[in-house]
Every structure is written in C-alpha cells, then in structure tokens.
Image 1 (cartoon, rainbow, N blue to C red):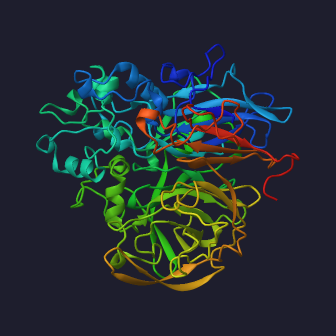
Image 2 (spheres, rainbow, N blue to C red):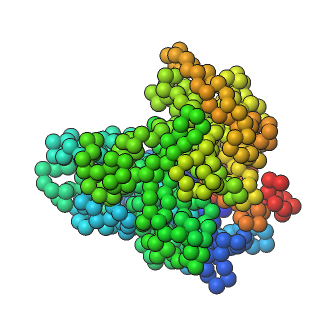
Image 3 (cartoon, rainbow, N blue to C red):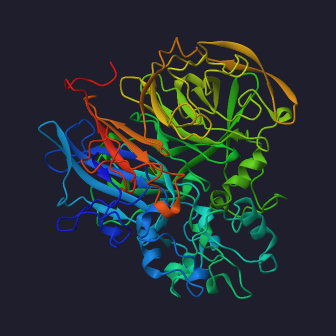
Length: 621
C-alpha cells in the first residue's frame, strides 16, 4: 500500500490517527481515491513520459466515506442548532479534490517523497481560473465570482485524463448533488429554469449542508436559491461554475488550476486523449456518467506541435480552449456520426425553442440541452474511455441500466439489453483511423453477466473464472492489453469488485447477433446488434479481487511494464455507521501489506496500491 487516506504529504506532518480527529486534510491524502495518472520526472525536473522509477502521481479524491471520516460520525445541521460544525465541513471539503505526490522506486520498493517540492493538494478551497468559451459568461457571474472568471475548488472528481504536455485533467462527475435550491422558479427566467432542471440542481441526493457552516462565500455558495435580487446578490449561478474538466500542472504547484469549459458541462467521468500526432488536432473522449446520457469528443483547432511537450498550462490555453465539441449518434446499422455542438450549428442559436443559445459559452454551459437537441444517442451510463495506442480504436464502459432507464421497448443496437444491470463495453473505429473524423463504425466488445445466466443474456460467454458486472474503469496499456475495473452491486454474492485483463481484438472481429431480453414488466425486446469475440477468444482473465465493499478504480502501468498502480476506493462501504464500517472491512492492514485483511477495529481506508512481479519482470505477459 503506497498512499492511503490521511497519509501526510509534507515532512513533519504527524501520521494519520484514523480515528476521526485529524483536521489538516489540506496536508494529507484525501478520501475515496479514484482516477489517477503518473507523470515521469527527468533528472532536470521536466516531464518525461518514458521514466518508470520516479514521477508525480496525481490522484482524484472523488467523495467521502462518511462512516469513517469523523470521530463520532456526521453531525447534521438540525442536530447542531441549524448549522454543520465548521471543523467537520472543513475536513470534508479538504477531503475532496486531487493529490499530487512525488513517488520513487528505491531498491525495488516504491515510496512517497514527503518533502518533495511537487507535493500538493487541490481541494474545494483552491482558487481556480475559468477558461475557454464560457469564461466571463453572464451565466457564470455570481456573488462569489462577479466577473465569472474564477471559482473555488473542484469536487467529486471521478476519473481523469492527461495531456501530451504533462498536465493532469480532473473531471467533475456528481458535482450537482452538493447544491441545495429552494422553490425559486419564479425568480428565474424560463431559460434559467430549463437549465437548472436539466442538470437536476436542487434534486440533490447527497447534499452535505456545507452552506450552513459559515456565512462566508466559501460555504454559503452551495445554496443556489435565486432570490428576488440580481445574480450578483446570491449564488444562483454557482452550479454553472462546475461540471467541467480542470487542468492541473503537477510540475508547477504554484500555478492555479484552469477549468477548460470548451470540453462542455455535464457529469464528466473523465477526458482521455488519443495518441498525439504532429501536425494533427488533439482529440479527447468523454462520457457523461448518468443513465440516458451521452458520449462526447473534443477536437482542438490547433494542430499538435511537439515543441509544446513541456508547455504546462500555457499549452492548455492553446489546445484546450479553442476547439470543437461533438456528441455521438450510434446508428442501428453499426455506423455512427459525431454531431457538432457549436453556436450557430445544428440549430443551436437564439431562435432555438428549447433553449436560446446566445454564444458558444451558452452551448458549453448547457451542453446536455444542446446534445438533446441534435439527437444524440442515450446510453447506459457512459463511464471511462480508452484509446488503443496502436490501432486508435476507442473503448467506453457502459456500466449499467435499470427499468426506468432502459425498458424493453427502448432498447437499441448500441444498448441492446433491457434492464442492463451488468453493463457492457462498446468500442468504435473512426473513419480512416483518424480520431478527428466525424463518422465511425462500432460494435460491442464485452457484455457483463453472471456466469450462470443463459446465452441470451451472457452474450460474451463469461465463466466463473472471469464473470464481471458493471465495468467502470478501463485502460489500454502501451503494449495493447486492455484492463477492466468494476464498480458493482450485481455480483457481490459471488465476487467483490475486481480487475480483469484481456487481449482485445478489433472492431468487426465478431458478428451480428439478434439479442432478445425481457424487462421487469415482462415486456420483451428483440434487437440486432454487433458483437465482438467471446471471452475465451479474448483470453479474458481475472487479475485480482479487492476487499469487501470496495470499488476498484484508477490504474497506471509504468513504461517499463514492471509497476502497476491501482486504487481501492471505499473498502467497507455498506458497513454500519456506529462501527465505522469495521463490521464489513478492516482493510488495509497497519503493516501496509495490501494482501492482508487488516486488524479488528481498524477503520477501513481508500488507498493506492502498487503491484509488481516477484521476479521483477513485466506484468501480464
């Protein structure tokens, strides 16, 4: 175990007590490790993508395991005179965000360099610059940011991305659930009401009452209720400052992170780059992680210049603030099209009856509405994406669906199973193997299932040795092996969450297939789809299984293929609050041996683990 919740990132900071009394989470690892990336450091302190023994590890801290964070559990505002305790709220806000830490391999063992100049926490208190077409927009101006060009912090960062110039991309997923909103529709315009409703602002399912902890902007901003005054007198537009991708330069810790609004605003799972080619645009793929949402890609207007390989955030200004955003349409004949989301394109202008887009900034703030209008394909929760480094084919995990999301009469070729409780992985090949193309061909790589299901549902032929459910993380290493991580509740009777590995084929290596499924209302659908090779042909193998209650997420394989970094998120989830989840898990052990269960009474902690081969050789060969 390399780096666990509460571990210090500065020399002189005390070891984590893990009893809910530590308060300095701005100087420690945050909670719920998720997406991450390793940036190799050259001997002269520059980004070196070929370095395998020294680097900066950037790790998202998506959320909090409430049962383990505080000394005696969460104190609700109603139980504390109407306000959450400030100490608890500060701990929670600092427990979110990103950790950037220097790590080194020393005589075969990895360690965190606690006195490194690169170590840094980005939290919900960190000042961040708004960039791109939405920066300064009227819809971003609020009491905490009158000019609409800055915001405070980043939250609910799920997966990640990286750039060819060595910066980290943190993606905000369920950011909307942190805001409260009163009955204020009468104080908003018709367009504003359409916007907050489409993004579920005020329909929060995990609001933390941070707005009650203090009367200052840093806390009150989480109450997005529109008053009878102007937008500069309240925080009605505060949610519009969130839901983007944030770029962080791990090599220049003094620089403020920058929000890249040109990537659009939704429940970003991550932003994954296609391999950069000199003289061609850069391309990033993204999923909106909610049921019946969409798959996107961003194409830069500037062509890649390798001279920018250590350009930092200035390179981000060049490539990430000026480009085209597209949303995917998956046709039933196995082809697809990318529809541009641009002001004045495809009916996205002031005259649109669904939403009056006044400029490109409006399109980026109301991205979901724009995607609705152009007829994008509604998917079964798009999560992580990965681009094959050799043939440039793109994979995306569709983690699951339910009855309301996908009844039998609403199945389609790209989402062919009614009540898709175990999910599937879809892939596509861009026309001419050009990731900037606007058309593609697609098929379904794998279907999740229990091994005991019939072949009409267990379409990929999974067995007890490789059954999986709810694929979430996906990563294709530089040798072309595909790694699959799960975040599942559907197969926990047979396996905890896990990671698998396979040798992928190519789009079109399977065949068309008629799929018949039945939903919970006994309605039946018959859909013809396109299915790749079965699990046996792909040599799909279970690689490891995590502790009880966890999600397996986040992965990086070093260039020498001898070190694998993986995150174990919220072990013990589902345990009892009065026992701090210790009745479900005590992982990790104080010895930091990740293969040990842990000691009774020890509160479980999210952590980054390191996997190496005992003989020091390449992993998964």
